[in-house]
Image 1 (cartoon, rainbow, N blue to C red):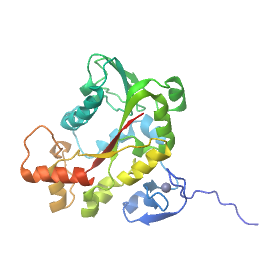
Image 2 (cartoon, helix red, strand yellow):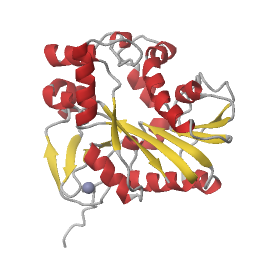
Image 3 (cartoon, rainbow, N blue to C red):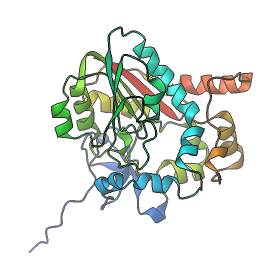
Image 4 (tube, rainbow, N blue to C red):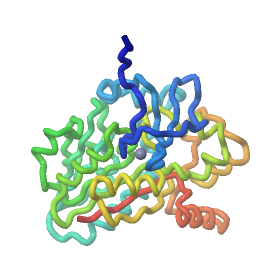
Length: 309
Ligand SMILES: [Zn+2]
């Protein structure tokens, strides 16, 4: 009699196709592979026994990983990354500026609440949805309402047609079912509301330029999907979010880019030594061109959409 082998084969997270190419992009010791779907081209992290995502987020494993290599405190890291939060807040404040009445915003997977804190204003009700039981939520003052939960069916059911602005930064790439997630995001949006969604960009030029950087930094747990402008658009379309324009956003600065490009990848001992992109200072013409080119060609480190319904 033939043995029945349980089906543990690859299934694309977005289009459910089973055919793939294996890309030489993962660090082999981790046991992970990076597979590219032959149908929709999405690159994704694959292992037969994937880590338990529920435990992973409930136990705050992500922070333990981030702080493994450094003795910097959380508050120091958040302060260091404040320029990134400010750049992002500017985009959202632009959307809000067209709204006259009181508005209700939610940040889905909003972490410590630093983005909501940055865009706070009178006349805005703010919900922070975060599944991790973070010991220090620094920014829940200023009337930010913390909901310590996953974005699950119960939450969607209780909050249909509720929000004027939905923010979702660096969350989609962590999920096992991104299409279902986006369909649910649509459900909590009011009529004439907006979604700001941001993910890392897998068309980032550094991935091709520096293999060491690519393997050690880019293709690692807990990111399950690696979106390019093309595959992000495909995923959004699958969920019924049509007519979106993909735009570019830069988190890391010119000096960081040059360090990796010219010297190969070396992990900085102190996170504070990593150069981040700042909008609010005068740049030389080289840096200005570097920034404009990558935003225009979408080879920058991050991509985002604003979807309006
Ligand atoms: Zn696919």
